[in-house]
Image (cartoon, rainbow, N blue to C red):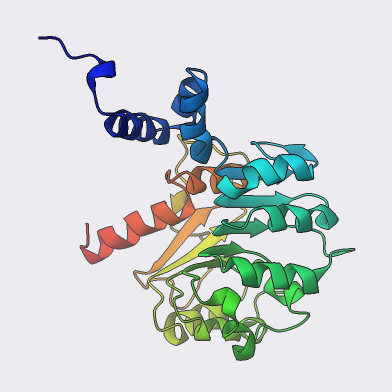
Length: 275
């Protein structure tokens, strides 16, 4: 006796379609054209990641309020690298984002309101200039704010490194396990303090601007560090040097691919025998 899809329980069909859609964005897009009901199942995948960059929407994402009210609830990952004034309505309409990267020009940005919105989201992953966000050094009082209660991954981008005093509050983040810093000259103090003071830290990525600036999946992006640089603590098994590929790398990482964080975990786990 031959069993067809129509013979299966609706719940099982729904589960099969959902798993298939979650396998890839391309697969979700294909399934979305099958029927209206299947399209509804694919929405959490189709509208999971929003990327706004250089006034161009790289992935699904509009700043129109009506559009955002319809699809913003599905967003889990948000990268913002364009007009700082337009990010506020986007964050308001995307209440479920937990992976947030905000790379903006500080001019004209409403940082008090931005801080309030981030406190409501309580992201697990955050990439932002903490010194600009808080108007000065990132201190213990900041680390204890509600917005950091769930944070495990942090990339405190800044043009002022290396200076541990500017970010020393990160040692008080209750769940910080993954930290990424821009690899610059004379950053021994920052590296040493991060390794010794952040009690839950398991992975320290030193991202570099050396090498190609465009993402190349075939390139070797984990490396031993520039030969002319010497970092105390650089031989710690938790430290990984990775070339930075900006938007492309972040997008890959947001989809669970071998982005910066996954690569760091593979390297460190290999060193410590946790594979």
